[in-house]
Image (cartoon, rainbow, N blue to C red):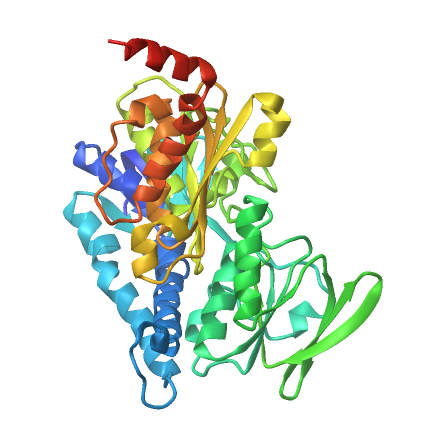
Length: 475
């Protein structure tokens, strides 16, 4: 049995929040232990962001090859898709990134890495593999896991989640997806483009938290690509069959069934904290997550909860941002609340759907007639025209006076274009602060410049402004 130890920082969980916290603490010379029972890199590397974007890339390539004729490139025969090779591409992406998140790297930074389950035994102690670790500060970064809704028969029906999807050996003939959020929509488009029949079942509307105009554009695109969307639909039962499964759903008071080969459950996520014995540590939690204050401290002020497990956001970049705040506030003792006003989120479908801050509807509810909206279309962007990416829009939501409240960008590279408005919201920048922004020509970034110009267009055409300009140019 390993000897007990006392450390400065004990980090539980080797996902984004845990790795950034460990790296920062260890490089500051603090005695740091990182505990991970599963795979290093956590959900994002092994089951989430990395594999999903890799399969989306393969699906995008298949889609581009199928539409090559539109740009004057002639294909000979049908596009061939080798699903085994696609999944090999997914695994190769994970393998390429693994060293950055590996046990060896963090041990090289000076951290002690223990590969086992952690359980609090007191307000300042953790038990792991029969060893007691006493800490000065602790970070809980255990993430989340797929939520499985209480559907009749679901436990007896073989189903996939984002954790098991990557073990598929053959392309699903007909894939049913429960959930129309980011994961559901991304995988629906990916598998449809790779050749599966795909049906999505969503209790509300797809991408229900984003700007409705953005969700509508994606809705139209998915339908055009053959994805069957069942919105405002409740899945009531699933049944295993000899060749797959049967799903029963209810819409508009009518019950229907559909048969398929595979089922993917993408109905949200739930925090992974049940094995931690939080009560012994004096850490308060609800089913939504560990309760934290605006500095990310739990009810035990020596313990912080970062990333998915605190129920605030389920985004890798949010987890990294929170870990940065822990290093600043918890280790450097710089007081202050964590800032999240500029937190963007992106659904990496085609078109990409990116958003930061308020939607138009949220802004109207809070600010009423003081809200101003300006838009720009991809169809007027020269780079989008040259690449055949004319479908999409950018929308900027402001409060009169120029305060940026939110932005939605839907189209090619939207996830890259949203950066400017994330910065603007986080730093309180107004259009006048960005008026000198020079976008290279021809680039998609000119869409952001177009939004800035659109904001000033009405002001420049105002009668008072025009009279002043005329007066200034009389001599």
